[in-house]
Amino acid sequence: MNSFQRIYQLHRILASRRLPISHKNLEQLLECSRATVNRTIEALRSYYNAPLIYDRERNGYHYDATSNDVFELPGIWFDAQELYALLTAQQLLEQIQPGLLDAQLKPIKDRLERILTAQNLNKQEITSRIRILSMMGRNAATQYFQQAASALLQRKQLRITYHSRSHDQQTKRVISPQRLTHYRDNWYLDAWCHKRDALRSFAVERITSAALLEYAALEITEIELNEHFSTSYGIFSGKARQTAILHFTAERSRWVAEEQWHPQQEGKFLPDGRYELCIPYANETELVMDILKHGAAVEVITPKTLRQTIIENLRKMQTIYNQKK
Image (cartoon, rainbow, N blue to C red; front, side, top):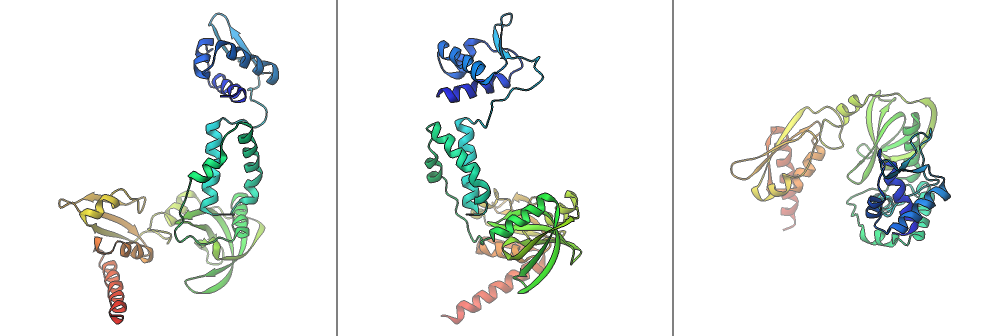
């Protein structure tokens, strides 16, 4: 621990305590000699004007509680662990969506790197040791993500042009952004659509133009948002109308039992070792894809409509492969 870190650590110890702390305890916490503690105390007093006093009756050091202002060190101070945590978070965000917030994060990133260099800490270690593998993530249009985020946080309406994949159509909308959702490596903007007069979820990469409006966004309560977007399975919104009951083989159960498919799911082990998973849903599209991903390791018990959809998909798959024998 260098002198820079030791001053910061001493400040943190004093700022977090209500009672004086003895010189001996400071030596233990700072892991240094009595003389080094004395130099650190003097540096904190002399160079940073800390209201640090010694209480003879209680044989300890503390910040003067009679001061009206809470003492803080000037500038931005971090210890090694906090710096690594910040840079790790930055690295995670950079790998989740490369280039998404480069312009906004660059000044912070540059300053953190200068502090790291001054403290002889290894930033390169973080870069080489953290790896995130994105599966099927789509490239979000950076400029429209930023405009969506700005409208969201400023609580303003947004005029967008949106291209729907499902209908292959482009429409112009005025929306009131409610929240951004990162789901399966992709960004979605949950918003009130003034064209449809209803809540909708927009894939950010499908927004082809965006303009911030001066009108205040329509406010939707968190309860309403959760009821609309979070009660059914996957990204497809709407209140859950059915519950799927799935049975997984005993072998696959060892994985599925620890997975969260939905916040309101219910699961239990069956006597023969299989695992029963119950999932509420409104639209079966995404659920069907996830069920088929498990192949013969899962069976749909109910409802019959979902079971029939799986059967039809399997028949179509069999037809495709039979044609190529």
